[in-house]
Amino acid sequence: MRVAVACDHGGLSLKQTVVSTVREFGYEVIDLGAFDCQPDDDYPDYAAKAGRELQAGRAERGILICGSGVGASIAANKMKGIYAAVCHDTYSAHQGVEHDDMNMLCLGARIVGDELAKELVRSFLTARFTNEERHVRRVGKVRLLEQELEEGG
Image: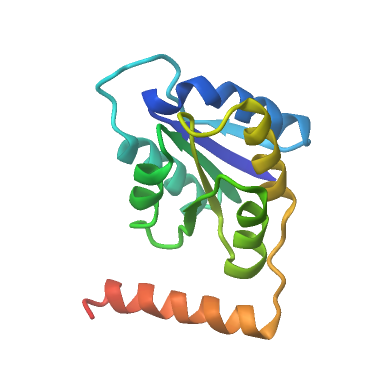
C-alpha cells in the first residue's frame, strides 16, 4: 500500500514519527511535505496535495497532520472521493475505515504525542472496509450526497 503523508507547519513536529511508522509497517510513503517550518504555509495546500495522490490512484490512503487535525480534515473532505476524519483514538481510526470507508486519517500534532500517533497510524492502515450490507448502504448514501453536491443539488 502507498500512503500519502502531508502536513503544514503545525504538523511538522509529528510528521517524522508518522512517516517512520508507516514504513515500519512495510508500506510505501509518498512524503508531500512540509519539509521545514514555514509559519505562513496553509493546511489546505497540503490536504490538496495528499488528496490528489489518492484521486490519481498513486496512493491508497493518506495521512494529514496539522495543529489540531480539524482544518486538514475539513479541507480534505471538499475533494471528490476523499473521506477524511480527525481520529485521536484508535477505535475511530480503524472503525472509520471498517464502517465508513475512510481513506484519509487526520491528526493534530498539538493534540497527540508520538506513541499515540503510532497506534493511530497502525489502527488506520491495518483496517479494511467490511463490505457488510449496512455499511455498503450507508457509504453509498454518502457517495450520493457527494454526487448531488457536484451536480449542484
